[in-house]
Length: 131
Image (cartoon, rainbow, N blue to C red; front, side, top):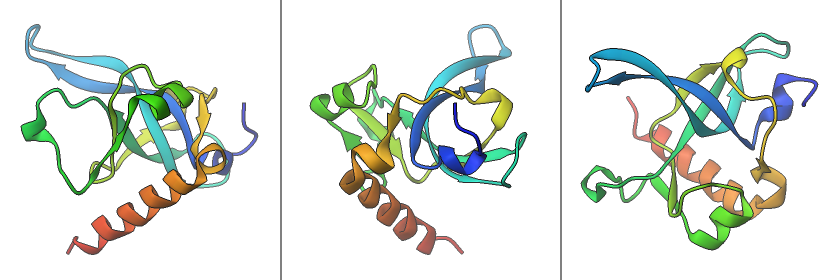
């Protein structure tokens, strides 16, 4: 466990994410991997800014520029269950710290610093397209 929210920046972990289940017609919650890219403040509880990590089964839903693909070898190194996985740079969202698993499974910023830098640069490129 990390001592401060800022310690989570650059880490891959999981979070409970609400979603609408079409079959049941109800809101449900699922656990999904995320990359923490920012925090609201320096103490808990707080909000984390995150990028979701997803599989994209329908390639028509893939953004060729802003869905960063991670191949099988890297997925294995990062302890991601599915290959390929995609860091969805254009899908930034907010997760409440109590919904985020405090145990991370990969420190992307240290263990894969080149890849992390590419994601940071890609995120900056995406942000320049806004407004």
